[in-house]
Image 1 (cartoon, one colour):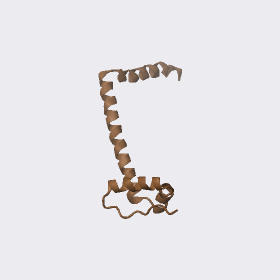
Image 2 (tube, helix red, strand yellow):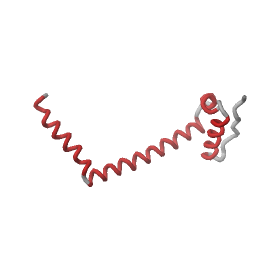
Image 3 (cartoon, one colour):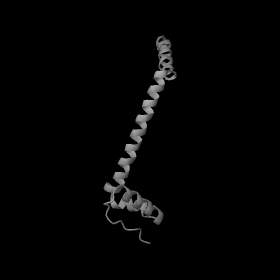
Amino acid sequence: MIKFMPVTIVSLLALTGCGFTKRGDVVREAVATKAGEVSRQTLKNNVEYMCEFARVGAVRDEFGTTQELFDAYDTMCKARNNNAGPIQPPVE
């Protein structure tokens, strides 16, 4: 185990050193761009699920407790889909 310690340390230094070069900048930029794309697509998928596929009881439990939450949910889903069906406000 101790025999491999110098090799491990040199390998780690070599790999981390790549981040401080122009190539490392390009890699960081590509990763940041891809992460942003994935984040936007994930949010889009989550909104689609909440507005189209979530169970009524789950939506009611999360967004039906106050008028403000209901209005936020209603606005988000209507903005996403102009053909959304009628949504009933919370019953008080």
